[in-house]
Image 1 (cartoon, rainbow, N blue to C red):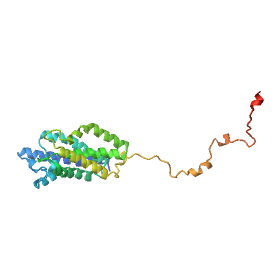
Image 2: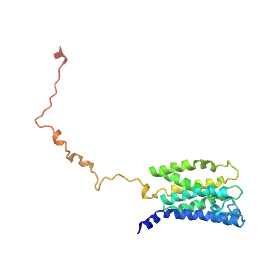
Image 3: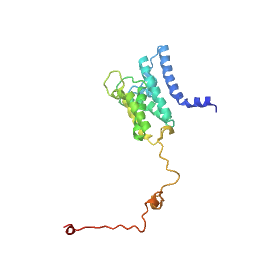
Image 4: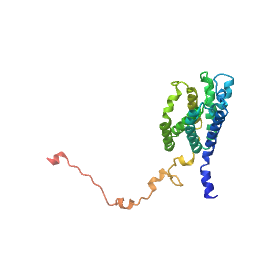
Length: 239
């Protein structure tokens, strides 16, 4: 395989996240181009029609600011999961896609809930909790970076601002937390696994420690003729 093909494979993990982002913008572009309103296909809590919205919940956005604000964060988080946990990416993707919508349908206010922010909250929670429970310094550093970049998102899980689907955010965070716990035994890529010390092929038998020949033993061995005598002097002798 040529170096060129190797370099292309090196960045293949960017492909799936990029395709999903392109899909979001394609749907938004069709909506704007033809003057359509796809909000009617969003999640409408506790209604039969609203169940259909679970399928489209993350694909729909309310405006250019909405989709632009979600695009960068979603792409970075998807790439992170795709790179660090390649064997989990598909499962994490679909769980973070559907489950927040289901939770929103169950607990949400009567309104149309839409946007990929539920996925973003799920991915943030998954990455953060995965780093914490594995006690791995590389993943912990990644968790701290996530907190630094997205820590302010914590307030988005509370009904503090009108027009924001805090139910979707809360459902996403809960989803990411559960996913991280469920797959806690799944290992990340080798590059972020901390290696154990190499003790050699054999095991140390500590029962045989007395048989070890030390290089300084000859110099410190006491001669058989050497005798140690202890003396004492009574108080009467001092007088």
